Image (cartoon, rainbow, N blue to C red; front, side, top):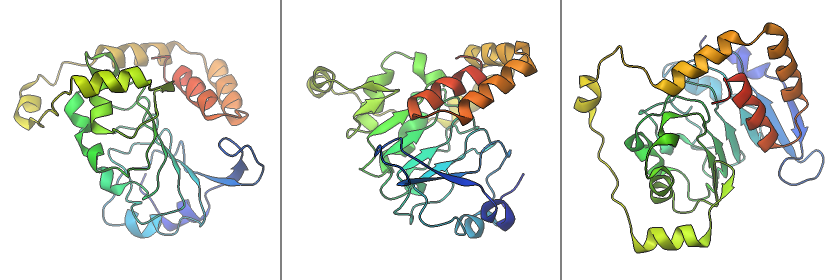
Length: 237
């Protein structure tokens, strides 16, 4: 499904207290579960119609392969992009200029160098979740993310310790180059094992259980709780 003016203008919204612990402070606009796709022709003008202010933009469970271009939005501090199809096309320049929290859980990020585009992400970004992506299981994963995003305070909802920062400063790692040829040489039949497992679990989950989890998701009162439930919906990976 493509972005259209009506999709954006009719998007439901509500106020939450995830971050400031005060009612009616953070406005969340919901564009989740719509199978939305990136469309460079129509999408920019449609995204421009997003209500202001919007503090939290929920684009969970769509078909996006990159970030929508929100670079000129100063109001959005949290972007929820879990369960999309984001991979090596990441472009940090598209992110909101003062973004603080970014959720990329359960996408299709398999190689460390696919994160390189985040080097151009806003310096205000302090929290990111990449749970459910293939890269989470690679050696040196946390160190690489911290090299790409040195201003992070939390990675996958685990606080980055001073010891971890000191270790990385003492033993810095190199940023890998993007190797498109290497990716093309891989067999199309090969599939990430975590993705296979996720699909298996989701297929086995009953509709009743899915509805229960969706109700829990709607009643969630913290970002951590949202991610936990979304992981279950995605197969628990």
